[in-house]
Image (cartoon, rainbow over all chains, first blue to last red; front, side, top):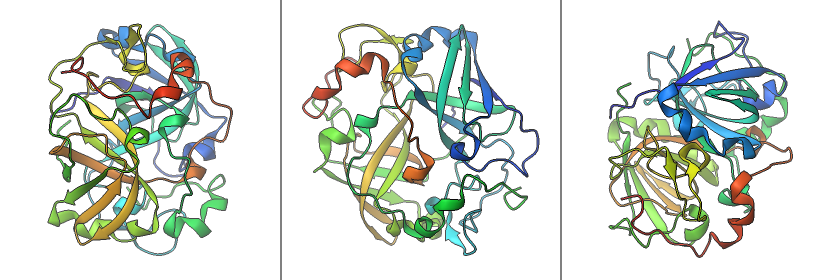
Length: 157
Length: 157
């Protein structure tokens, strides 16, 4: 599948270590999306949404590991049961807070990606589309309390 | 970006019209994911999660429209403010309920994709990673009540 970026994500993070590991660890950190001008018209109506999904490419992840030790754990887990960049597709997903839309520029809060990350898609966050049912989160259950303070290291480099 | 599928999604839907338009419209419909055996080890620990994101390719969407009339609306909206398949990347995202993992087969509930859809990634759903803040959903606000009953037509074909 040949998928072209629709733009790029600009963030204060230029190195893979010491980054927040999820948007909840970076609620106050602002980033900017610059969408290719050819796609600017597709941003119409987006400013009505407070939160958006960014789907992007982990461009610095050049290997695949089927088992990884997540930042929030000490045991090896299957990569699809984690958010590690070392997944076969190298696709990332973050739910962020949309602050402003100006032309082809989006300002957002909750930055957990590297500067220069290629953006593949933007989708509106619609809680009605998500689950209201009871949720189980496997190995994550006992570790999720610490996520806001956790920072990345070099394990996925 | 050359992104290879990690498997395929099998569903009861063989035609683009008259499909549920989101997983909430298909809570009881079961589908199956068959992951390429080369990636089966990456599924370890996934069964602990009740819900997973499927990221897939809208393989029957061969055009891009920057403005679309969503199924839940009567006005043209920017494609990035919708979940329409006619987005530049043709990437789809669905949050589904994971029922069982058997070897390289996942059974899930909440099927809103076409049979034979190429799967790009699987990610665990972790509510702590998502927002707890107040959410606004733009044009969708006044239309989201009807989504469970809504079905697709040929507008995105």
